[in-house]
Length: 306
Image 1: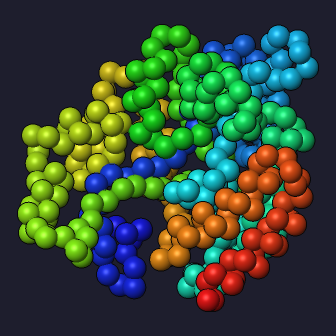
Image 2 (image 1 turned 60 degrees about the vertical axis):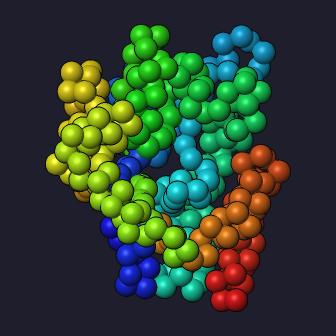
C-alpha cells in the first residue's frame, strides 16, 4: 500500500506483492559440490559459490557458464536491496538529497562491477545477448547457477525449463548492514483524465475481490495477490518447489522486505542519470564505482533540488 502513496494520498490499488529472490540450478550446485543458498548466506558466500559454478566449457578462454546473475538496474528497485545490504541508499528520506556517494552505496556498486569484470563470474548483458539470450533465458538454458528475479518468474521457468534440469528458489543474501529483500508490486490507477472513472473503479473492485477468479489469477502468474487470503495459490501445492517458494518469497519477504524511496522524479532520475552513468560500469568502460557514484550524486542533487 505505502509504495503507491505520495504526500499522504493513495494513488494506486495494489493487485500484487512481488518479492525478489534467487533461482538456483540444483544440478549445477550438486556437480560443484555446493550446498544451496540460505538466508544466512552473505555476498561473500554468493561470490565463492559463483566462482566454483563458472566454467569455460568449450576451452576458448571465455566463460560460457556463469555462477550468478544479479540486478544492476534501478528499475523497480533492481539493485536497491543490494545497496541497502551494504549500508547504502539512493536518496535521503525526503528525496531532496542524493546518497549515491555514501560508502555503502559505492561498495554495493563496486561489488556488482567486480562480479562482471574482475571476477568474471557474472555475465554482462552483452555476453548473454551474444548467445541470443537475456539473463532469464540463459538460466532457463542451464547457463547460470544463480539468477535473481521476482517471485512471478517461477511460472515462466516451470513452463520453459520443464524437466531439462532440477531447479528451485533460494533467499537472496545478507550484507554488512543486514538482510534486505526487495519488494515490488503493481497497482491499478484511474487517470484524472478518465471519462469513466466510476466504471474503472468497478472493474478494479471486481478484479481485486471476485473469489471465483482470484485463485486462477494467482496461479497463472505465480503471483501473491494483494488479498493475502489467496497467497497459497501462487503455486500449485504439489509443486516440488512450493515449500522453498513460500519460505523464500512470502515468509522472508514479509520479514525483510524493502522498496526504494519512489518519488515524482524517480523515473526521470533512473533514465537520465542512473542508466547513462552506471551503464559505463556494467559495460566495462569505467571500473571505478566511486568515480561514477560521485558523478551520479552531483547530477542527482541538481535534479532533486531543481
